[in-house]
Image (cartoon, each protein chain N blue to C red):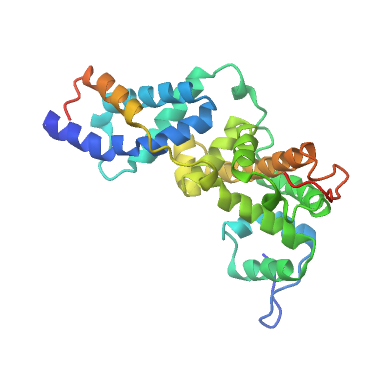
Length: 89
Length: 197
């Protein structure tokens, strides 16, 4: 838990920010801690690119592994094998 | 439930998940033919167990669980022996600090704009050991919650978290290595001035 002072985000160092990287990106931190990490990243020239890099990789993952819509042949193969088990649909 | 209705429900609730299941299987197997076999076997097992499926339960999650079990049986010899003794969130976080220091020195800022990113990410992900890769696929690709992924993997939520964090860190590390190998980033941590892919 990172304490706040007078409603302002608490100051944290780069190590603390790095420890919180993925919990921060997943939004799994308490509000005060989220604010502190965000405040640090907003003003740290070293951490900002790394946080941005990690965030972008996570965002790019789903589109890097696209859904294959051409499952017709596999679907037919599966249904055929299911019919051998009594599947009627 | 009459057989025809039961099968119609299987069709709409379970077979409809085929594209997602195939993507999941491919990420596990890293081989399209094997992934097809895994998916077919998964559906056979799902159909045989369909009577035990609880209405309202997440069918896709159920399929992922079966698929991973089928895959593990196929692959008993190799990656199952991956050392997971470091599945401790604190240790993983400390490793992340080291990775962070390396990343901030290496000029990663615009790396993703300078590489053919989708193939690079696919290759990087394929290099991540299955035990960690699966956590990333479930959470970061399929959009499962930590709790949902824990259900599929049969592990505590904290283990999902540490596996996921390690997967992400290894993914970053692998992309970094890819960039170094491609001459985009120098291993010493400075960016090449002329490399564009």
